[in-house]
Length: 497
Image (cartoon, rainbow, N blue to C red; front, side):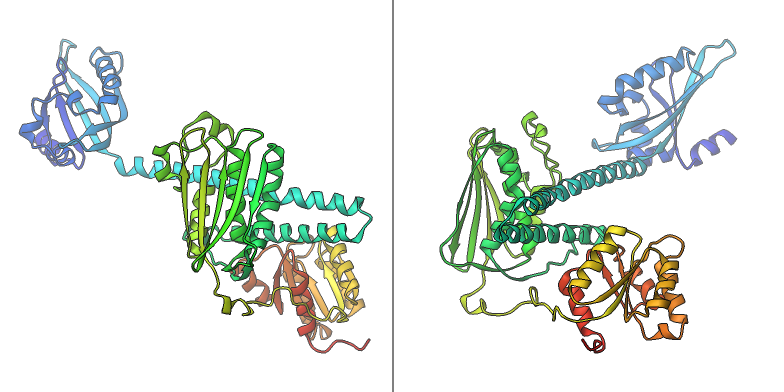
């Protein structure tokens, strides 16, 4: 009676089986609930009848070892089939009850439902894989603008004419802006993951989008020996768009074409104005896309299972990003291919600005404050190159500049130099920037100084901490020249020249 009460009332599935045949001879209500069979249906069924076909061979071997006495018990996680064929993961702990003669009398098992844990572990593994893929993608995306920046530095060193230097500087500035924007987005990955990315839209010329994209993709195209053919409409086309993000869309498509086209191929980029929209098409002579893969080509982590594509190093993320960014701009993207080895074609259709909207000013990008504003500025940064380069830039703007390498030195320099403005790094040795700010604010002369946190930390919590420490503002590295000039111009009147 005690055994029966314990067996029947257990909170997990319990069963006993004939050790000779593996057929069930006793089951409890919890097992019936788990497998959705009645007790009468289960009795007479064999353990292997409940086991998933892929797990039956291993299950038979384990049960045989138990009956033969090769093992005293075993615990294994395997798949059972519920009534109707639904798969359920279970943990089976099995033992054998033997008679006085040592022969097996019955097999006894405890069966626990572990489906939720198995699925949770699979989800964690998938999330970890996606994290690794994201990091790999990030590294890839950051390397793209580094190439033209390095090339631009070499041009500046080698060129003797002003025009070449200015072109290289403009190119480097665009690529650096692209990198900074990507890093800004990385600061809050959860926001991106929840589809809360915010576009910084302005009136953008389509030719600027294409030029920026080509500049980014050109090294990959040239390295593969491809011919790139561009065809843009003669009349200006303007979009209400985020220049960096839209350039990322086009450069991703160009890079994909370059990677999946055999050496010496051809890539076309064409733009065709339509009623209220513009269609940008990237076409190539590459390996093409199988018809069965086209419906899922824009899915996250989608991979076409071909050795050629795997060797090209695709992460299966780029096209998903393209689709997401295009849809955020109110557009669409479609893929087409005539089959394997016959190239592919991606067409992005975007709404364009009406003619009467083209004179609207959307932002103050490109406007600069008076470059001759003079300030006495103390630059505090433990990175010597960062401190020196910023000091040089401020000096060229007409400022009187001193530097300090850590929080303690900033107190000493501020005491002597009496700056109007302090650009304060946060993470520094000896004394961090927040502690230094509090110490300066405690001085009578320090109450009127404008202190701006200039740091690589840009989350809301970081801004709150700098504000609580006494900072008047918070800028994230690398600071844009216009932002710095605007900051200096917005302060109380500068000292007379």
